Image 1 (cartoon, helix red, strand yellow):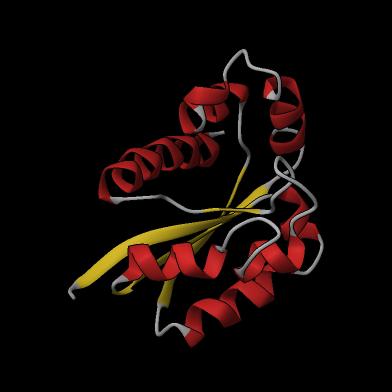
Image 2 (tube, rainbow, N blue to C red):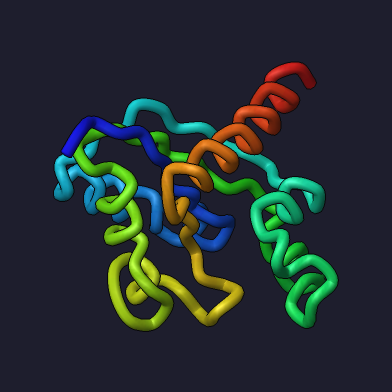
Length: 137
């Protein structure tokens, strides 16, 4: 395996309810280095880019209401096999990882991580754009 970069998004409920330190610990336990932490405010446009399959669907309003009014925290990480390790740390809602510990339900699932190299690059670009905008204003 090679050194990869990835990220873990701690959604607003996790950011406020103790998920940050637990996420840092879980990432360290996987041998990953947190290289940057940034608070980010998601917009409805960013949510639509992150979850295009949800736009206009049954859960769209609930998803936006959950993600947009309060800040989230991005943990950028690197390490050997980072993509897979971050996904493992995140886990599946109600089944494993941090989502088993923190998630309330399918929508309020506390953490997000990219699925593969392509989604990682796309989503990092979305977040970098938001962070750049936040830094200016």
